[in-house]
Length: 185
Length: 185
Image 1 (cartoon, rainbow over the protein chains, first blue to last red):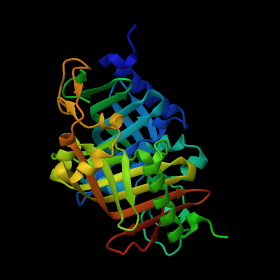
Image 2 (image 1 turned 135 degrees about the vertical axis):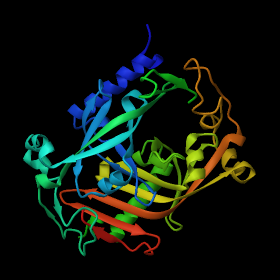
Image 3 (image 1 turned 90 degrees about the vertical axis):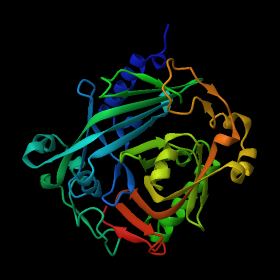
């Protein structure tokens, strides 16, 4: 009997299963990856995002964000992104890299229409995110489809590290047709 | 009665208290921040690291790593780093940015001498981390003080987001003498 973490295919299937759980289950650790980008001045940046889609066949993931957030300015300058998830239950670190396209306006209206009212509160704030304000609560939530953006990250690399009794590390790339390659951990 | 998340000073003190807990308590979420760097080819990268020190007075944090890991190559090319921690108990996102210096060899020997045997297993593997190997377990752990590195991240920016009934976001910078500035969340 082979455990899932002993083969390229087993690790691949487990990682995509976990990403799917993150999309479906608001309390799963894969729900809130850390998104790393590079700022226009060359600084790395990292923040929590909410995973909204994971397509194992096309090897892409989707996120929703405010069109006026700093991450959009960074992605406009450099579309390359990394996503990081640590899954304690499986002792698995999931690292994704890919190129992000930003969609907004009419194209993403069908997504907006599916978002419950309370969740729309995350998109649209006056003044825009990151604007200095005199007092902590000097802002107004203003849910607005014009500020809603869908980020599609077309993956180029996936790196998985399983920290079991033994450590196993495998990497996959689009350029390598997603064939797994073991790496020294 | 003012809650800690209502003032610049309260948020600052809470963040450093949490970082201190991360250093002291292996099970605290601040123990394992996500470290984001920029690769020599300009890709953002993110991985779990272990927080080893947090100095509120000097505004710096320290990490330990393998001198031959990819993050060292990235930091040699671009010393700027971001650290990200999500603390569920406090609904607090801690984002740090700073410049990293890498120390190894005789200078860090006193740190090495204090690391318990089982923890030394994290430093030194043959072949070096990231080397392609034919089978998952084609490597040997070889704890070696020559592969042990201490990363000191001298912070330049701290950004905190508290997701309570209201959302509050504050940023501090070394250039601004760490005076807090509220930002629209």
